[in-house]
Length: 421
Image (cartoon, rainbow, N blue to C red; front, side, top):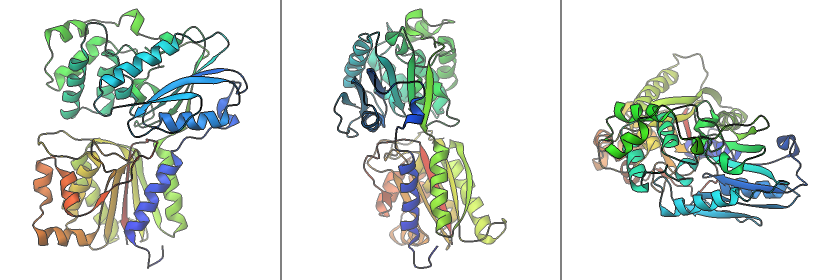
């Protein structure tokens, strides 16, 4: 990399490359045995659902109709597929209303129509209809408590599926009979289809009792009503979709694709690259501390990688919330990294969510530089105190280090880059 290049600009370029690689495109090779000249009914849900619908329309020449639900502010202009904007991460009554619209539309599938489902991260909250006997408020409160208790995304989605009539293959039941083709942008470690937006078109072999055990393991209070609904060995038949032989599930983008795109940009700039993996999970602050120790080793020459280098990673870390501050897993990771680096003079870092939102605030994440450590000392900002309050958004706002991108119209989860001069 050129010696005059600003490390913050370089890190931002890597992030932008990662996001660009995750944006949806459709080509003939992705349609497989679909016929793009024939009619299609298109449904979808997720933060990337509107951009996926827009891209699908651009590639499909036959008659189209349908609707997708995306996060408020993430809409894109479309001609034939309606875009409905709901709330995320906490679902609202609008989400319930729009989910009912998708169900009613699914029921109108004609025999000559190919059924298409577009899914990406965020779909779990956006596509929302509780099982019979469970109120919307109780479902929302239960999932929120589980998230704050530090459950990982697979555990959260396992519970979501059992509390929903549209997840775990539930939506597919309204599109039957006939083949369903799902196009997906993965935001989940390992890319399991059942966990991406809780698998609206994917069969769930889990049981309600599995979900109850997860809630109890994390100490989430369970009402008598909810306990009765979950204390069963299997789901009701009408809310448990079964895959058919002709169904297809096709990935448009995955986390590793984005990391490789960022690595390509770095290597073209003459920066050596190490990819830790796209599957890193665990407490955000613990991962941040571990990566700080690794970064110091690379900076000291203990590792067999010539400087400058960049350490890339993805995945989905979690935050066990004990304070009442603002922020998400990327700022919590970065605050811990910042604390443990102690202003190391050659280490810079960026951590951000590829959807443009870290948690529920207006930032994708944040960036740090050695100068920020000394500035924090000067103005009396203590990263440890902000970590204690789970208030890492405020830490980086005080340092003017937030990364604010606005909607990216895609989502392959966390992106982290540590640049070492």
